[in-house]
Length: 438
Image 1 (spheres, rainbow, N blue to C red):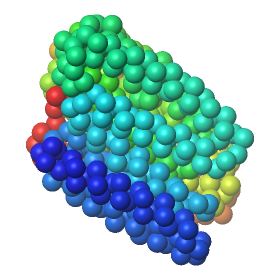
Image 2: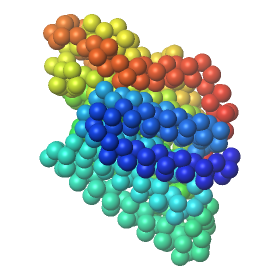
Image 3: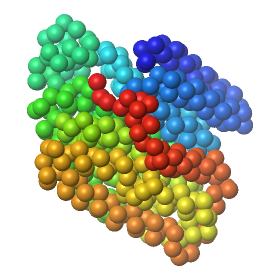
């Protein structure tokens, strides 16, 4: 039970962040490996605690700390400035997400939300360049406004019910629920509040992008549903918006040449799939929408790490300038092929099951919904095929070598391998964490 491990979890998370920040005082030759090792060990400890806790917060931790572990390991190859700060922010970000999914107190949820938001803001601004500052300012303005709206919703709930418990939202007014949903939906990059996400990805380290699209926006979507998405009016609004978001995200991704911007818009589409399943009112769709958090997260994080490797070796993420970049490295090519095909819903990767059963579940709402859902997924074939074709065919560039980025390439491959392993028994994951939204 999450309540049994929450205090220990918070102690371990706080200790890990504090130790990693303290390692900034060590000489650079020491702080990079020490920070990587320390943050990786704390990620593993928190991953084990999450698995033992089970339930929804344990599941979010299972996804968050697996991707976080990959991010800090890959960062050893890809992040060359202030690695301890990068690792501390990644650990703080990963630690905030299970609290969002599991806390029964609105004040704790808001505190975790603030920790998440500050961590994202600092990671977006991590490179301290003009573009980073502009993207961070856009994030701060939109998500800061969202936070203010959500805080107004919490205040209204407390005024109306006299309680800060999450279940008190059931007795609150529709206005309070609308404020909570609208405010917290900004961080979920839910359409039409998604505009900050592509710009944030363009300037953030690729390892931060792995966290941001791999689990952060999904955890925010879960919080939106927990607080207000079950309301018939709110759920209907979000259901319609999610259909539009699935098409807007995929169509926008088709038009991109930069790999990270393409993946960012793809993430808008995939979080729309999750919102669609959660707000459909169907139990099967809700369960597999939650499964899609892991299904999408592991593969998308893998592709963001690969984009970081490409940028590190070739100085660009432009597909038109990366023709044949992976033609000489079978390991990286296999990782990209598996991730890209998996994200289209092709077996044997986990999105096959999550997307299939979301489509089956939303049939109970309207016969048109699974058709629209399938059409949106089909659009993703276009840009993922172009990604594979550009990177794998031809040889206009010197080949990318995974051995030069061993930790990064291995981390990306292991995320794909974990996804493929879960494909063989998705029901085990569903049963182990009792995937449902309280």
